[in-house]
Length: 298
Length: 180
Image (cartoon, rainbow over all chains, first blue to last red):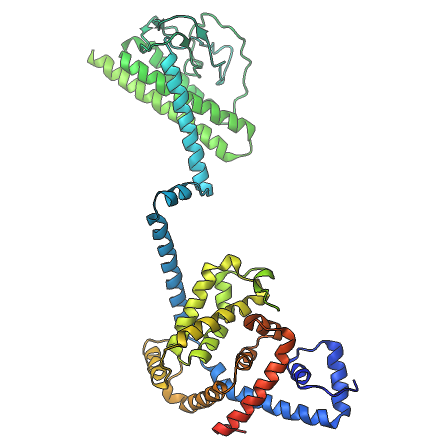
């Protein structure tokens, strides 16, 4: 480098801001140019002076702990203020908060949708039903729950009293104005009993049980047979309630079982299925207790 | 104009990491501007609260310090307007800090050092902007690139500004009674 170093380049040289090649050339020049070498020495002294003068300022202690406390507090205040602003900003904010989907909220919405779907289907079914379903199955033909074909449409203009499966008891369905009778899919309540199947329309293939399912099915079969054997003692209102709740639980079992079959390695799906089975066991126990209580009272 | 802090995002730091790495530079820069430790704390708190609010929009690791110090300079300059800078209040702050158990130097132990700080501050006050800020940031260890980003200046001008500022400081500091 033959040209002398200007002030900015010399400053950059001391500040380490020059690239390697330029540093090399600047060093060579400083070794050969007495003017630039003198300027460099003077600059070095001034830099040292500056650093010495500002050192106490830079070395003064920093209250790290207090700053941390203050900043944490202000961040918490900010969060709280943000949350309250969210709460106070009216219906729009409420709607937008509903539409912000987190994982838990998504699961919650999914559960709500499932419940509404069950309730809707059940309501629709009850509205159009004149008779309870007549699709019992022999335990000899199936050992596991199967979802039956869901619909049968009759042409009866009014609801017709129907005999409950294998019991000889006539159950009066709710008297709804309807031109058709919709028979909902009944799921499994009578499926594991030895009821007589009056008119099996389709052959049901045996279904492979999922692990842990058999114990629930046995319990349900026992409870179901107990209830059905004494169904004539059941009050009509209780029968209606029983059928309604049973349909909901059976659909939950069908849905969760289907999910468990599709995802055999997912323990959550199996847990949901067992929870549904447990709900059915609880329901049957409740009905059995109520029926016995009603029987004793008669 | 290297005013592209927000566009050169690299790996973003977490808020805690940003505090741990940069709170000292923020506090010292703030204190150098406001000349008051309590106010510098206020400024530091405000700067990091702004960082928290804008964490998603702040630059990555390499330019975060420049972003923080730019905010620090702005907040500090706004704070210092109308404030009464005095060593008396800073002494009271030091006293209360010691009484409250925080790690701040006791005034009786560093009176001489504090006098030296005041002399350096007075000399810095005589230096015009942006040279003064260039010196200040250079002393905080910022690179020319970071200084340019912080002050919205051309990087190629920083060397010259630092040199002129340093020269001016040496002259004024000698007059004030410094070591030159």
